Amino acid sequence: MALPSPPSASAPASAGERWPPLESTPEVFNQFMWSLGVPDDDVEFHDVYGLDADALDMVPQPVLAVVLCFPDPPQDASYPSEQLLFSGEKETQDQVYFIKQIESLGNACGTVALLHAVGNVSSEVNLVENSCLDLFFKSTSGMDPYERAVCLEKDDAMARAHSLAANAGVTELSDLVEEHYICFVSVNGTLYELDGMKDGPIKHRSCSSISLLQDVVPIIKAIMCNIPNSINFNLMVLSRKEK
Image 1 (cartoon, one colour):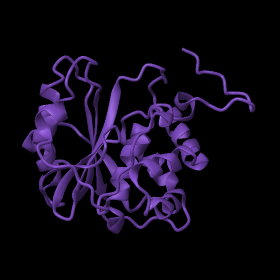
Image 2 (tube, rainbow, N blue to C red):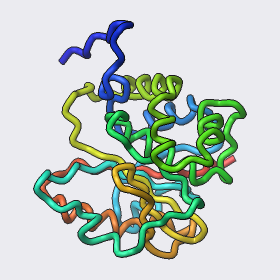
Image 3 (cartoon, rainbow, N blue to C red):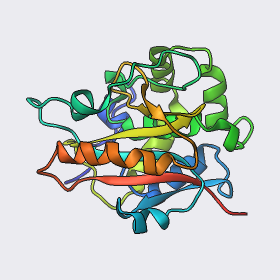
Image 4 (cartoon, one colour):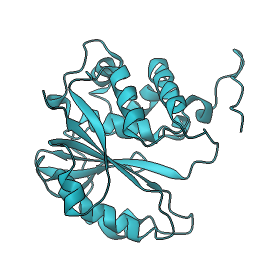
């Protein structure tokens, strides 16, 4: 399938053209993240190859955030996390950095997940001063989730970086997107799920940075059980690099 022609100068790009889907690989996410201002010797994404103890032991520590790419549930199915997982109350405090994925952001859920990951581990990441991410987090720190989304939608530098990352994947870009990204972080001793399609962060349970990956596993298994007819799941972690 040929990629769509660039829009003319007089016609604004559609959400799909401006925010095409990102391929769920550490290579794509690392290059994207590093291009935005995260030092490449600071943190990096890694694949998680299984949910058993042996596979989890292979994951580089410490894990700062977990990103899951999973199939969108059928339209007539209850969203599994709402049905089974989110017994905790929704977090409304300012301590968790959250962005709403509004319609004009198209398929930007990968970028939203990346922003959720980096934005909630700012004390662990030394962003390059005046880089794209540094300026974005500083300018949106006092905003609500919807205002941050509008700011992201208007951020041309972020959109260009997103588009370059999307085109760097080996999978052909398609208008049909069937996967979605969410992020898990530990903030002040609590595990949160950050899904831009939700109204806000979801509080799960007590959690430490040391146990983050293990604490996320039951949630991921529940999501997989509720979408049994697909194998299109991919799990990545954002880990600190050894120096």
